[in-house]
Length: 185
Image (cartoon, rainbow, N blue to C red; front, side, top):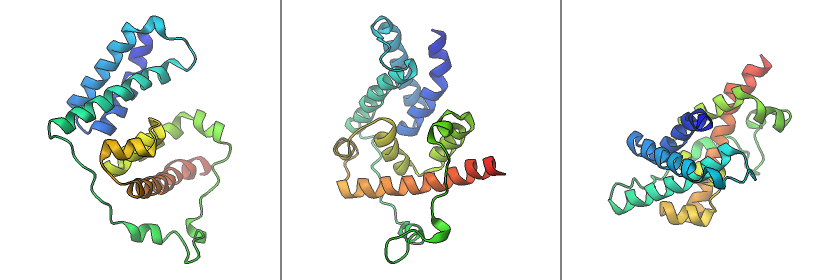
């Protein structure tokens, strides 16, 4: 039970990111925690406990998103028109502009074990526009395929790839400013 209370804040934050409704996020987390308590004996340890609970939450979030659609409360994604920001990062030949070239993050394992990195990452995710954060999280954090995302969000595949690209560029830029500059200073 103590492990669940330790992971609860991250579960709520994750659910809010997707559902954009505090009450529904709390309900989804509560449902996931109840399921985790009920199925605790079936936890086999093939993954981390937190990963297992997030997996349960993933399905609760998807169920809630489907219910939002049925109830007409679904907020479809709006198209982004920030192409100029993307264009400024690349040359005509498709290569990175020197000033936009990604900085070295050092050893990935060390970054991922650094608590400050995850605090910056969470802040950067919250700063993303709702639609961009939702698509990125469904793909990279929840592991849905592009086809599943397109079906759930009712978007076209090429739009999904553009949104994912924008999300990665924005996250990279935000993380470099919030984490890399602080660790090198």
